[in-house]
Amino acid sequence: MAYRRPDSFDGLGFHHGRDAPLYGAQWVTEPPDIPGSRNPYPGERTPQHGDEAAGEHGGLKPAWDATQPGPPPAGGKGSLPESAVNREQLSRFAGFGIGLVSLFTENVLAHPCIVFRRQCQVNYHARCLHLTPFTSVGVMYAITKAQGVKSLWKGMGSTFIVHGISLGAEGIISEFTPLPRELPHRWSWKQLAGHLLLKGLTAIVALPFYCASLIETVQSDIVRDESSSGLLDCVREGLTRVLGVGAPHSRRLLPVSSLLAPAALHAVLRYAVAASVQRAALWVYQRGKRQQDSNRSNMAADGSDRPKMASASDPLESYFPELAAAWLGSLVADVLLFPLETALHRLALQGTRTIIDATDGASSILASSSAASPLVLPVNTQYDGFKDCLHAITRKEGNVGFYRGFGALVTQYAIHGALLAAARTLLRLLLQEGAKLS
Image 1 (cartoon, rainbow, N blue to C red):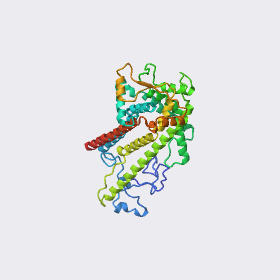
Image 2: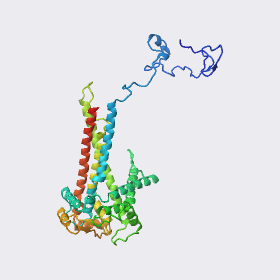
Image 3: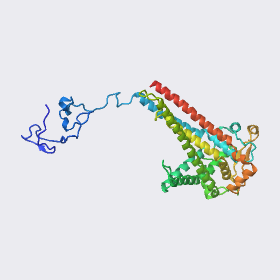
Image 4: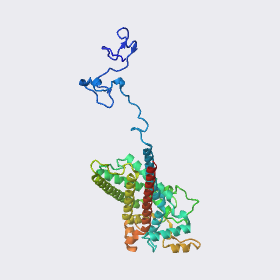
């Protein structure tokens, strides 16, 4: 039998004695039963003032007989099935895998193409321009056979250092200045100008170390002293070039101040072109996807099963379009700014007494490998500045001289795109097999 609460109950008093025989001597800690404060009927609406008889005629249970909420049963509505958990784990693995493949390809596998492209850009007296991937691959294979596998992976550590310096400088500058590091979804022209200014200042800070990394990248292994070279040589050489100390260079060495404008211009234009192409590609993809989903919805019959659409959590639909758009943006930016990069590399290398590998042809390299030493060439340019470099290349080599080593760039992005497509196909097959097993 349920106890009936006394009429004089206020929820706060100490009830003792004959006036409260049902409660005895105890502190009452339950709150007063305020109408509407609790719903004694789980799953139903709270009864109002005129529904007091619902407990008797409506079949509703009173509060003490109501089913109390508890943990959902195993395998019920509140728990995820094991197949969904496995599918989520596979999706995370697929997203991580395709991102790792893109990062590894861009920074490791593509490095030989970067090395050979830079060597072709600064080799102004070479007869073969290597405008197609076919001639580039042959000479790269000949250099590897003559000097070893490490000859095309030289300077990879210094490139990572330059990337780290650029990221650190960008973070520090954006922290102590109002320049935005990332653009919001709705940006203004002032924010855009500040963001591009930040990219230019970051390129200026990293410029001396970039020049030192460029020397390590194009220098021939024939004249390289492995015993005295270290991982932080890029940092030391960059600081010595800024401070003007250390080993004396040639008089043709240009000061860093004359390279600031070309370096900042190249960095800002490359970022602007790559970001614009990437956003445009993503917009076209999302518009096509929405149109495709709309067509599928229109084709579905009224009241029938919903059309099968790609899950929003599918990593292949979430990550791969962004990676593909970034790949396309970098490709377009590098192709458009290839002449500017050629001039910048020649100016940065002038007066550093750098000796590079011959890039004329595979037959000459293989023939010279049987001699006492392979064929190497010094870099001796005499440009007075950026404008003089552009005029000299146009006058002596023609406009095609700006595109020396363009075939290596095509090879680099072809390898990157092929590995991205292969990784997408492989991971899609793994997801399908995991879905079948679950």
